Image (cartoon, rainbow, N blue to C red):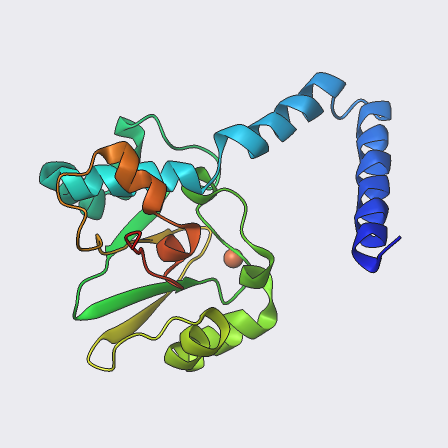
Length: 199
Ligand code: FE
């Protein structure tokens, strides 16, 4: 067995044990565990944020509402809930690029992006992103923000969870919302990547 396979087997065993205890103690039922897993797998994830971004790109009125009150605008699309009660969306432009971090822990807009990636929770990302965002973006994410573009780093908290409306890539004029949504990546909504049109 490879190391990765061993790690995965160990994690699976721990998950199983935890699940058994929760059910045994009457804290959860099997149905609740299954339902939670289903939500994580199919219902929350960056595809929801991508849907919001695509709508904002094609509908200027929606975009305006999204930037004014992200929580309310997302609710219009039936998106919201746990860890998405108070959200704010920052719009990228040629002049300003936004990037998100939680310096304290790992606050993240689950309702639109799903669960945070592991690196988002690492102390290295949380500390360095604030001090030297341009370098972190270039070194860790291979994303070179043009020198003329200012980088603003936003510190998410349980009171306010930030995410990014990335720039719409050139060459996507006339695309449908579905086509556009398929281009939007999780990283672009955290501000550690951009959205690229397929070449
Ligand atoms: Fe946090």
